[in-house]
Amino acid sequence: MRGTTMDGETPVEITALASLSDIPARDWDACACPEAAEGGRPRDPFTTHRFLSALERSGSVGPGSGWQPRYLVARTGSQVIAVAPLYAKGHSQGEYIFDHNWAHAYEQAGGRYYPKFQVAVPFTPATGRRLLTRPGWDEIGRAALVQGAIQLTESHGLSSLHITFCTEEEAEAGAEMGLLHRVTQQFHWENRGYASFEDFLASLSSRKRKTIRKERAQAQAFGGDIVALTGDDLRPEHWDAFWQFYQDTGARKWGSPYLTREFFDLVQEEMRDDVLLVLALRGGRPVAGALNFIGREVLFGRYWGCIEHHPCLHFELCYYQAIDAAIARGLSRVEAGAQGEHKLARGYLPAATHSLHWLRDPGFSDAVERYLEAERAAVAEDIEILTSYGPFRKATVEEQE
Image (cartoon, rainbow, N blue to C red):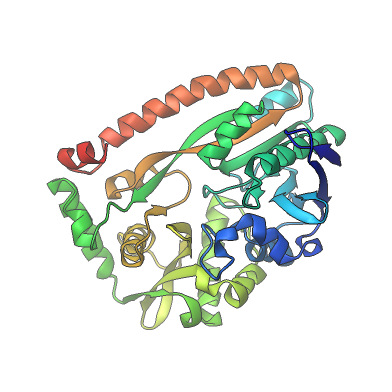
């Protein structure tokens, strides 16, 4: 596909790749994580070549998964100026921005909703850039990717294009380009410059502070040790244990795990510095664990599982250990994944998340647009109400506002 940029002068060529091996990591990462060019940490690891490649090489995406790669690459001449992780989707699993009702309505009206196109990080409800541009090419690169993705959707006769867990800035830019803007919510913990976990507790109401101390005490009494591992402290046997936990959670939540065992081997090989694995050991044997990925400013909680159930151990490994780690590392936020109002009482407040949508059928698009307008108002009200019920002392909430 070829086109011109919004200035009408710069020619841009868009190609869709079936494999990430078709583009050098340096070209992809020059757009996905330019801030890491000098050896720094990416804002988030999920759009890096190594993470997306691990999904593909492990068979977690590709044939039989319902996620067929069609990575978009925008070039001017020989220079890559923008890329996007695009997938042809045969279902709506592993997305966390739920459109099952849209699919049902579309098919009830006689349409075929699947396959569809999705710009996303598979199985990862974490906010980050999705229209990945080389520095200095933001406006031109985004426009080229959106135009190219829509053209590809139309040429394949697909029902829709979705860009999920994008940044608010991307959502605003996409809305100006005519895409539909959806707002949903998650629960995030914000670091207000806390010096320690006790410093964080001091910002809570007395009742919530006592509850969290009680939960941590109950968890710590499970009869073993809790360790947080990253980098070279991680060993293959740790992943053997976590694979058991992940399978248990996957079987209960999704019917079968999304990720393959090989994916975790590739993470150990190529991404162990991006990982914080929290394990509960009893008699030296891992009995529960929580997997986090480390971003430049954010700790991303991703998976939890166990083979033994102990009171409050889930809260400790997933939420409180993550807060401890964020404070120690000077990170600004913990994103603990999708859903879960139980996080509110543990210091995780509601936060807006964003997605963009393009629907090929004009009538269906108009109906969804009206729905999204009402949904945005409802989500904003829900965030306001839930925040007011948060665990923080009233003075603290007013100071934060």
